[in-house]
Image: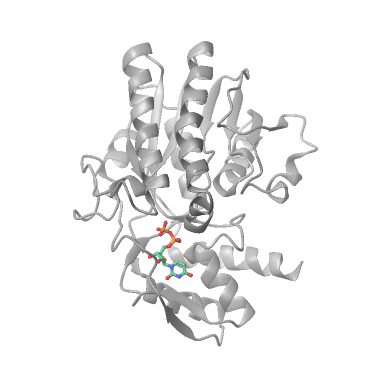
Length: 311
Ligand code: UDP
């Protein structure tokens, strides 16, 4: 079985490539290396089951595979806001190209949508039945609305052509192979703590997020990918252990043993106030159950960044 993983050199993509290789799949990793990194996939180069294709998902492609997992899109807030028009194209043109390739081959597609489709939610925790609270004209909309449009495209291919689709809404995920400078809260806080710099808490830090360790998300992706029930989602995946950002900063300080201080800085525009996945559907439909506690996951991630910073 050959898997095509778009965005395969990114944080989630490279962890997924590793798992697929370990499970005995052949892996075609497609990436334009805009935010993906060769450092994330270099260790697979000698594996004959692994191939890399430099290609931008926004351009049409014709690639043979038995299933497709679509991860291609800049995903951290600073990265997706750097070129918002490109982010929208990656999402919308990208999903058309993925779905056309899948329709031609008659193979399933698993697409990673996002908790951002809920915008700044006024229902908490967020079930899949909640349609969200998204401002179409915001600085976050290139990602939020791009991902929402991509879901629409998938469901219309499914309705019109019967394409086998699987849609995951990924909540905040962290772990080894995140970029040290991608601007996400987990990588920022750990790197700042390890370097002895101030931890930059945005706003008053009362906004909440729920953090999932990467191996739990990968477990969920594999469960869904191998599911034969015809379940399409959309389904939330993440961990529902919720933190206020300022408490999260304190936890990182305690686990790193850092003497860094917390510095409160301006809150970015339209930063969602709270976020927590309702995982009822994921548990019921797929038996999904995240296992890694926050301290265990953070310790592994801290060890990873210690290694990166030493280099
Ligand atoms: N955040 C923060 N300090 C940072 C980076 C992020 O306080 O250095 C906050 C950010 O405002 C948001 C939360 O942490 O409320 C999660 O941010 P991230 O960019 O990791 O993901 P998001 O959930 O916003 O996509």
